[in-house]
Amino acid sequence: MKTTTGQDDSTATAAAPGTRERLVRATSRLLQRQGYEGTGIKQIAREAEATLGSVYHFFPGGKQELAAEAIRHGDQEFADLLRQGLGSVQDPAEAVAATGRLLGHHLRESDWLDGCPITATALETIGRTPDIQQAVAEAFENWRGIVQGKLRDSGLAEQDAHELAWTVINTLEGAELAAQVSRSEQPLEVAGRHLSRLIASYC
Image 1 (cartoon, rainbow, N blue to C red):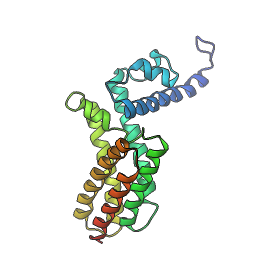
Image 2 (cartoon, rainbow, N blue to C red):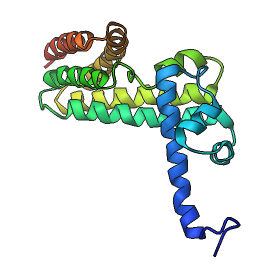
Image 3 (cartoon, helix red, strand yellow):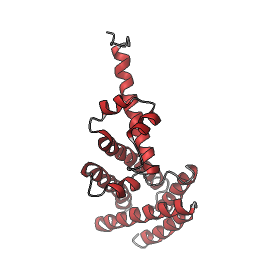
Image 4 (cartoon, rainbow, N blue to C red):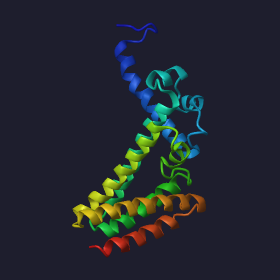
């Protein structure tokens, strides 16, 4: 069956997820680099090579709904980096140090632009946009859960693993910001080494 544009329905259906994914990815990247207030719907559409109509087709709630979905996308991207770093070494203390180095390398590769995918938006929208705040909270919980799982599976007690996971994520988040400001991997490398020593004291 043909659509009004002459395009086969099956082709149009197959193309739709591609457009949505481009919108989410573009929004995630823009929010990461310039924050929520600095990112407009028109810019998102241009970056995604999509029409304004398609933005509101996929996200009737507009920028706020799209931003929440972009936060979830950024959550998964950062989670993948965490899993990669923590999974690179069996020893949990060494794995956390390796994760710090990996994050530093990733940041350098982006020319210091792509730090935490959600920090800027989180700070700008606290108390104003519940959907975005919820997505941010879920992202942090997800990241802590990944670290906690690594520590627990390495033999640490559940409560210790839980509390150390908070410490690891909080420290790495601060170190990423410091690395961006200084344009140096050193803050993440130093944070990783000291977190490693802390975790080793529990093993």
